Length: 342
Image (tube, rainbow, N blue to C red):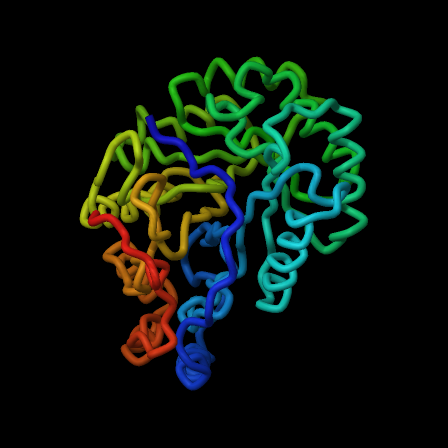
């Protein structure tokens, strides 16, 4: 079964491309609106690494919405995680992007914090990062890899706590995977929520990669169980997954088309966050990236570019600027390593 990748801190990398290319990209798209012209949803991307921010293609895309997963105690426990959060959120702010922060277990240990501990850390987070206004209280809360898997009541408490800390923030209830247990888990979760959420979020990897028909999709099922807006906070065409093996780039491209088509079925789907930017040089984990380890664009990215070109009515020059030739400074996640063949 599909699952999101585990949160991991990634080492610093070199800038991708050269400054001249970045300037060309920005100029070529100067007349293109950052908001998608006719889509009824906004496209964003989730990425744990920092290299994306120095990639000229990221500048050219003009994505306003980004997502990152951070430990729930990041603001109330100084250390590497806090430094990472400062750096990542600072880069997002410099890029003029709006971050969606999803919380997960502490980097120190896999745990399920009490309501009071979580509330204290959310208050600390709000004080340290007051500009962050979009939240997932717990990442993929109904999945077996999460300590909330058997405790939807505690997960609901985290939603209640975040709403208590910032009533004017966008706190998305749920953030569930379209897994076999989603319906049962959400029904239990809803019983412990305070108020009636007007915003929900989910990861629909199964719908997208299995190419499920809309009528039998988990996305439709969650819409039937809830009211208000729905953010697809993590989704993508998967190239490699440890439990499934190598699924391939062509299949991932087909899944990407499916990902972009789902909002046409419901106006309640207002954002989609793809995951991830560039593939790691490790064939034993997860890979749903738009770019190969050497930085070359995959078919999935070309699907996105073609869709953006249609929606933004881009010129041929602007489309070309979205995927410039790799320069000598292009980052390669396999540089200096001897990766296993994939």
